[in-house]
Image (cartoon, rainbow, N blue to C red; front, side, top):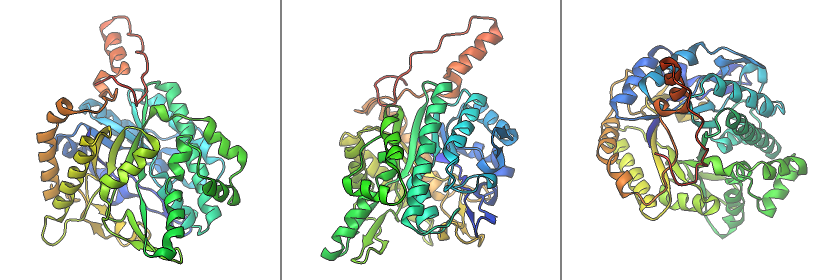
Length: 432
């Protein structure tokens, strides 16, 4: 699956007084139809996309579906397969922030309501980058609750991951063949010196916490003590072990130039640049979880030469092919996002209005050189990969082939509605 995404980050900053709405900053509310045109111009059939949570989820059990109805109706008409991104770094004002213990159950209700309204949707990322969301909100003090403590991080993390698990359960009740693609940052921490080995080991264990909990995997003893020392109870921990939905999941992993870190003896770190690269780090995550993989995010700024992003795209695609040829079942590749973004050079912490040239298109919806290069990759590789693949085939169906579409067609023609097909887990053979 070749894909792109439309950025829908929506954290709050300045003590919750200011909402950072990337859909607004990037002009999607006004240009959504043109954005979908761009997706099709690239030859893409898959789009990471979701409704703006703060505009849609108005109160417990109360939703404003107007914009979602329009946009998802057009996605259905175009037969684009969405990977629906329900929570991307923020929650509605009335809910507060990720320290709120009511968030998981309420979010599951929201996910269920969305799935019932759009039953033709099969692919979901309920909560995007759970680790990064908890880290930036609870540990770095950048977004939402803006806390800078281990307890703030653990509290945010346990609520975020529980929300993701409960949302998966709620969606499966509506769409039993739903597949969940975790878009999670793949990280690595390099020790700068022998004295930095221990802090680097701790950070390398902490990077797995969100997926360990999400997939019901027992954490290492040191991380178990860390979680309990910072507010997680035994009962909360065992919730994750007892609600294992790994068989419905694809491990989506994101890789940027900033994902590798150089750690010093005092535990501080700086960006290390590309050291191991996507190939090396993906093997670490695959060896841990043994799930199908999708490269769910990458980008690079178009620099003064005009070809910097094109070269990064080539390197990432070469890494994807290497991973695939070495035997990891990798099922997709994503450049994120469709258009340029705004203020990501400060991780959305400062509302400067600075355009970051990271997209396949600029904000006037003119294709960038990296967009042309991505379009060429899609054209040249789409027909080759399925015939050469040594990987499994994931049972993903475009909207036009969903059971809902078949039932609608049968109703329109006065025929009996087809029965639901038997469900298959995401990591099983079969499908198209």
